[in-house]
Length: 142
Image (cartoon, rainbow, N blue to C red; front, side, top):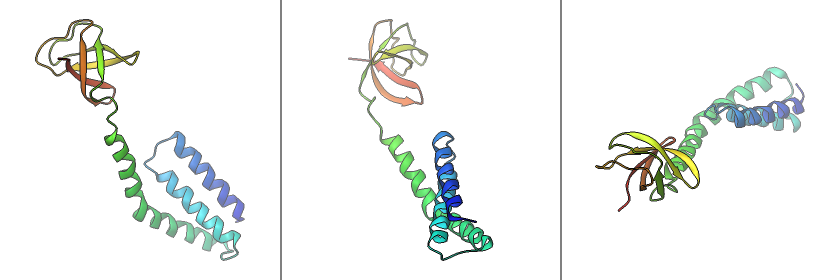
């Protein structure tokens, strides 16, 4: 197979990874395609069977040595994001203790969960303690 075909497949797999989160499976396969494309372009490998073998070996090696590190790096960025913690949200409706309701923060609507001991009334300012997906866990601001 020609080297340029491996490069095209690699780029297509990178683009697909951008639109479909697969946990870096497509990224790893795209990287393996680029490895084979570079080897074929340099003239080190010629036959399609050898290229397929190099693709398989490089994909497995990349998966075992780099996939977990990439996923850990991505997750650490998610966990370390604390830009909302300590910010002020405003309740748009009455929210009992332990209940969820509508609120607003930064001019956008949010789902709030009242984790404080008392009920929140419409218009009360709340402190964001944490988030669970798109739900902000809040308590009345002192």
